[in-house]
Image (cartoon, rainbow, N blue to C red):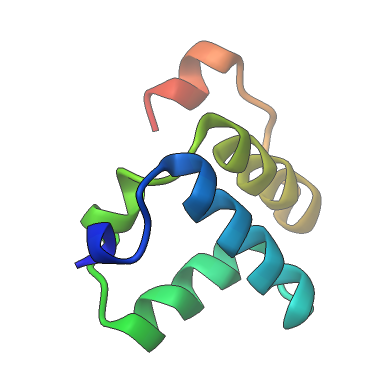
Length: 78
């Protein structure tokens, strides 16, 4: 379903970042909002999340939830 909307990770990331800014929410909340609004499955959306967007989500989670920091290798396994 999401491939009908976006042709690249970059295009999808730009959309999620704009959505997060527009609605004053975190990037993860913007991803959830996108899935709810479009009916996209989380598995489909995960394939479109760029490494840069993944890093932003991680940094927000560390800051917001006081999560322990992980190495880049551990983050890639998520």
